[in-house]
Length: 454
Image 1 (cartoon, rainbow, N blue to C red):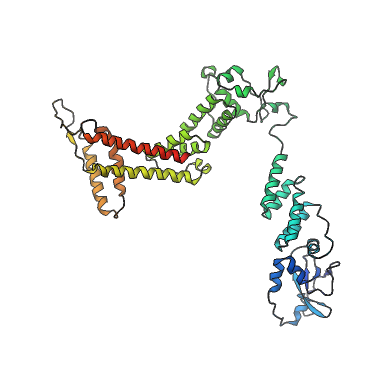
Image 2: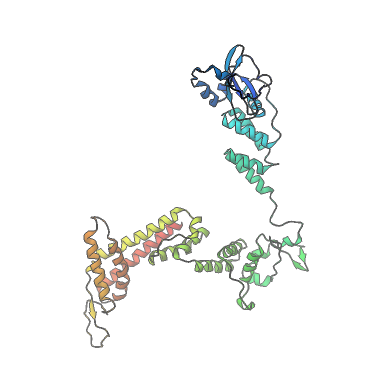
């Protein structure tokens, strides 16, 4: 031997993996040699078939035999393939490939997992199917372990089944052994009056009270919500004059829980008031739009979308976006673009950028004459703005690419329209046409808003 480093001692596997006719040796991680046949492994595994089909050039170094890359079987050198799996796993898988009696099924989930991982690695279909079914048998007793194994091996069906089983096996939010858990999931009691709940249309909640279960003579109603949610729910069932001071203002998350509880127990009065409070607390029209979509509030979502377009709000990130699809934002922005294009179209249709107004001096004089066909408006507040806006449009139109809408024209139209709507009363014939056209724009916006939230 050319090297002074001793080779690791190896042992030969048990029958039938000690055959002298073998043409390849699989050496496990614990130094056990499996004398196997390429043809059998190639039929059972596409992985081995491809590996054995690769051309192996003859070695130019005879010392390779001493280095453990080959072994001698019946006087002929046989290649050795080192593998990372242990002998127990390889013995199990190879017996499933060979025409011998199948081994016993694993009785421990981690052993089955090790065998299955190797079967998947070497593309042993029959072994993989058998071991996946075996892994399922452990779900009832050890769902969490099976879930971890299934996630590691990317077995979607087994992972889903194990997760569902584990969830079902978890204890309920309240324990039957704790008598206080019969009121709220946090083990706390919340006292209330039947009359107040009934006045708030909470009859459906009272119908849930079981018979014969009392505490100090009062009936007990088991609920799944926590004490904070129930307390806030009941607080809104009572008239405001009952309480000397208002309790702590609930957070947005707590308000959503109160609204969900009110919907669940069909306390419509509370659900409506809490919904309005959630909308009022929204920091922007965009936020209230996404909050409304998240909770299925079609009417409120429509109103928020229209206000967002009308007020020309900036589109900044809000947390409620995380609970809605990207389509909701896309359609909202498309709605705003449609509105701006309609403004520009209306400006061009009535030639408003060339509109001439009869200006009266400030302060108004009782002797000031008005033209019969033009409206009269204050000069100092309007004349400068109109002049600057018109100049802005003229400058931008000359530089805008052909067939495109100038951004400054959109700005001009958006500022001019509210002004025109105020100053054009009944003196100008086109005034009614302008107002009707603007109403038509908003009717179209409302229809589009309905399509968004449908």
